[in-house]
Image (cartoon, rainbow, N blue to C red; front, side):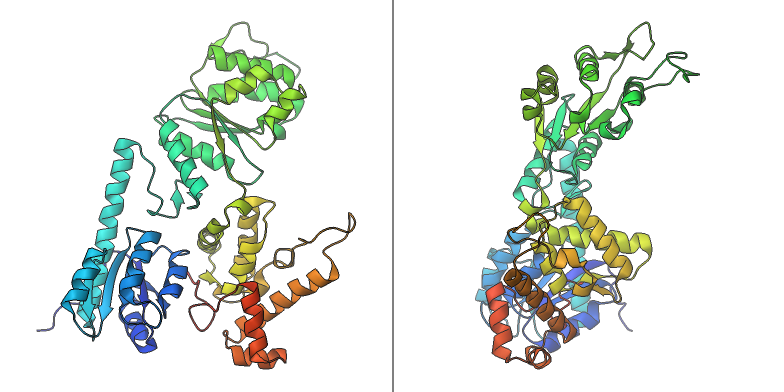
Length: 479
C-alpha cells in the first residue's frame, strides 16, 4: 500500500542553504509545487535573502565554506526569531544535534533526504508559524501591544521594520483606544494618512466612519462648508442643508491633512470645535454636538508658522497633544526592499501581470536613490516597472533613467546636473550592472562583453560595495 503524500495547509517560503547545487535542486523539486523555494550557497547569502523575504523554514547545512551552519543559526534567528530553522548534516552527531537545539533549532535532519520527511517538515513548519501568528494577533488584540519587530514586514497597512517605524507601531497601539488628538508630521508621500488610518483601525471607533479631508485641496470659498456644513439658504446656491465632515465622522475619526494651510479665521472655529466638542453650521443658529477623534497631519513646520503668525499658537498646542513623526524614505533605506516587494506583489495582482521579483542590479539603484517623493514616488515607479517589464523579473533597464542616474552631485548652476566625472561614473556603474544581469553575473563573460579584464570588473564591484547575487542568474530577489 502506498502512503499518501502529506499536503501543506498553505503555501509558504522555504530557504535552502547548502553549498551543493544538487542538494538545493532536490529540495526545490520536492517542494516547489507547494512552497516558494529560495536558495543560498552559504550563510552570508542566506542572511541577505532573509533581510528582504519573509521565510517560514530555513534548511541550514552544517558543513559549508566559511561559517558552519551551527554558527549561522543564531544570526538567522536574530533576523526573525519566529523562523523555523532545521540543521542539516551528512553525518548524525549527537553533540551537534544537542547544540543546535540549544541554540534554537527546531529539528535536526540527516542526508540523504526522504521525500515524505521533507514534506512533513515543511508542513510542521508552516503550521507552527501559523499558530505563532495567531497567538501574536490574539495577544495584540487582548493586550493592545504592537507586533514584535521580527513578526512581519509591517503593521496594519504600513510596511517597514526600521527602528523608527517600530516606534511608530508601538505608539499607535499605545494611543489608539484613547480619545487623544494626534498631530502627524513628515514630508509629503511618507504615509501620514496610513498612520492615521492605523490609529483609527486599532481604536474602539474602528466600526465608525473614518473621514479624510485634504484641507489644501479645497478652495477657500468652500472649506468652511466642507468642514462644518451649512443650512439651507446660508449662501447663494445653498438649496438644502449639507452636513460637514465633522458631522459625517460622528462617532469615528476625522483626518485633517495639510492642516497648516487652513485659514486663520477657520483655525479659530476649529479650536472651538476641539475645545467644546461642538460645531456650528454655516448659517446655523445653534451649535451641534459632535463626537469625533481628530487626527491632523502636516508637511510644514507648524512651530515656524506660529512664529510667523500664520498658525494659531493655541490651536497648535491643542493639536499637538501626541506628536507622531514619519521619517522620510531616505532615512530608512533598509525598508526599501520590503516596500519594493510589497508594491511588486500588489501591482502584479491588480494589473494581472506575471511579475515575480526584482533583480539585484535594479534593487541596488532603487535602494541608493534618495526618493524625494518618498513612499508615494516609490509606489508609482514600481507600478510603472511592473506594467512595462518584459520578463518575470524587473531588470535594471525597467527602472526609470532619472532613478537609475539621479542628479545627486553638487550643482554648478541652477540648471546643471552633476559634474562630468561623476556623471560618467554613474553611467559606468549602471552599464556594468546591466551587462552583468544580461550574462547572469558570469564575470568572465561580462569582462569579454565590456572589453576589459575580469579583475577590472571585480575591482569595480568591490569599490562600489556590490556583491554577486546568491543565485547565478542574478535573480536572487524573486518573490
